Length: 249
Image (tube, rainbow, N blue to C red; front, side, top):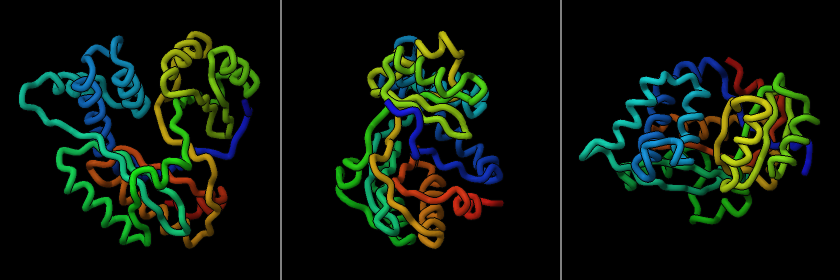
């Protein structure tokens, strides 16, 4: 187990996040509804629903919105969303994974393919990119919840696989199946996590320069702006200085 790694979530400028908050809530609600419909409407009995609710709360989504999303899953004749994963390559050969929830596979595939093409990328076959990523559970805590050593010790005791500590906080990684078990042990010691999710973690990152970085970030931004797209992951390595420059307001 390592105490630190280069992997980090890309943080886009706050202004853009605020502008898209309504769309973000819609995506979170769609995941909550889908999780409740595929499993049970009781989060205590549905790990995916618990994860979706925690992700919504981490974004300060009102409880009324969360409750409405759960109730919507029980409505007769409601929307049925299909889970779809797209894999492709951006500029400089960067691998990109796109997860979507859609009620129209053809529409979503066409939109995603168009976004890739407009930004110098192309879609690949399923498995063409994901083999370069690990599917992991990720539990995040703010820095003030404990030291890096505290987190590492707790993660080992809880059954975690890896810990990353950056200036943005602590991230404890584990297998997806053990996410809620590890999360419960950590919660007993540090309190509720700031987020808990299952994601794709790159095994290796592709170094890119500022020009390629600008193009890639625009593509990711366009993908995230799609109503059907839930998450976007990419295995690129861009210096903090260049990233800050490209994402500055």
